[in-house]
Length: 231
Image: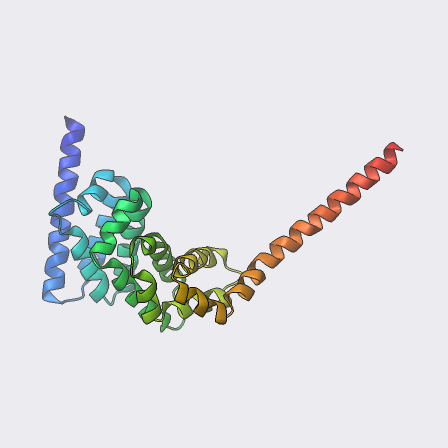
């Protein structure tokens, strides 16, 4: 009973936080409150599966409010908080929650955010990692994702990001995952091919294959020495 009470209280807290966030959106005022509220929602999402379930529950406005805030906020920390919430959601919930996010217009909002973020100098790595991670999860659930990505100029943004960050696996990995999603669209795959994605992949794979071939040579030499020694 006590645990049910705690869960019920947390659910009530979540709904209250969403209501506050919705009010901030309605008033169109950027404030520290949005940052605080989204950090609290993130904490709930990280610690409670029932909170994550509540976000995608029938009749809940939680997702719409979060996406609306994401679309309109100018505050970086608020943006990162919401992206972290979405990462929690799609990582723990499988395909159904990814589909839910798509149905609420999430892919378009995130693609727009990607385009806006790409114009910032210097680029915010955490922002790029988060956006690419979420899009890589929800893209396959959006039948029009390939077209949306192309129209928004996302293909070149992601491709250039990989080109400029070859030594940064934390950033490159979600970018590569998203490039794979882009490539599910035949027009996109041709476009990416023309823009050097294959050569780029060889650049990434190259060092690993060289390292492995080096290890193989060492292994053969050791084996040969051992066999000579035995003789």
